[in-house]
Length: 621
Image (tube, rainbow, N blue to C red; front, side, top):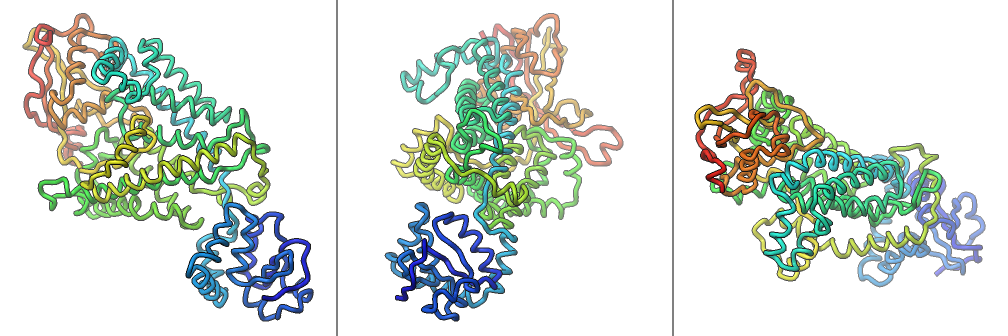
């Protein structure tokens, strides 16, 4: 082992004429900070005659403060001992069998091909390979998340009286006591909601109004972490109280995202660019895992869904025919969906293949170097824009885009000067938040791994202990599985609700957004979600006996409850409620271009028969 004169502190000597070395030394300087000095061999090599000039040219040299000299991969790993989070690499080099040999072999291969290595570096990272920072991403992610919460609360607020209010379809004031009678004291843990304190209409409006205020605070950057805690509590309370009307995948995605964002957001009352605290890498990792899980599971379940079919050969995802049905069979298509349905067959198949590639392959680039990561971000956002253009998926696409912003580091988003002038000091609250995020990683990573594995093996049973462990978090909706359109609906049946004063003349209750009048163009309601319209799509997949809320809707119409009637486009019985209500089944399909040109209709309709027989108040009582 070579020893030289002691430097004032540990020193790395590198070849200043190597472009590859120049880029990566900048990264090492940021990692090691002031703990290590850096000099080029051209400037300082003569001070160490014990080290041959050829050795400086072959590899980087690390000189300890006691004069001990190391080279190659060993020099690299020993230099990282000054960072507590990187000490495991030096430990692995010393104690894990084979680690040192493999490391030195890779190092020699790169050192012998520096020109090619420099090209690959520029290709994958660009000119800046320093550790990425995410101040820009955090700032805009939190603002967009606040906007999404604002949309979600306002959208729910304008419907809450008609859906779960005291005169709504499924009053929460009836739901919670019934749950308590059925579950006993377990109801409190299985249904965690503030509505146990009060289920009055006033309290429901308080939760919505409080959610709006907290959303605005998050948008403005006022106590963001505290605001997120309140948003999770308020929205979870409403999600539990909302029963079937607030149980969509984007509702649980919003809760999981907000819960993880608590550890990502600053705890300071007010923060600006000047006093912005460091970004928690642990919390960022959690949010990236969520995006990875969301996209990968959504893609994989489409290809494993054939196992659920009686005739696997008819699976629309494997044969790339899903878009032959999707545009017109989805819950609330847009008018652009009508036009997309008219695209050539080859383009539809290409679009299905593109969707599967983006959802299954691209998510792995979330963990790739900068340029691949940015390309993945662009593809994921592009897919969400296409989905949002052809169908009304409320705030789901916007929420997914918000998660995608976390793939853009400051080297891409802002100037280099601003990127590297951030303060690095941390407060006690920031450190506690980092430690808490690490604990969440340890707890949730096995659950997330099992959820993702379940997308590949849908019939595989959970182990008893893991199922029991998962059940502890399931009611909080902070660790979830995802997968939209596992099976493509190949038919579209619409329920038409009609009322009558005499049982002879029937008038329809037109919905605001779901298909009804065939000459009315498909509407555009996102990011608002008309919850009753959406539920009607699901009700049409089964019978009224499988949808008790539908029967409650009919009863509310017989009573003429104004809060429920307000959920419809108009009230066909403004004076007195109908004496009879019934529901029929119609099959809907987009018209062809020629049919639309001749009739002006966007839909064609075929009567199928009865969904719910004519009922009166005497019948339901």
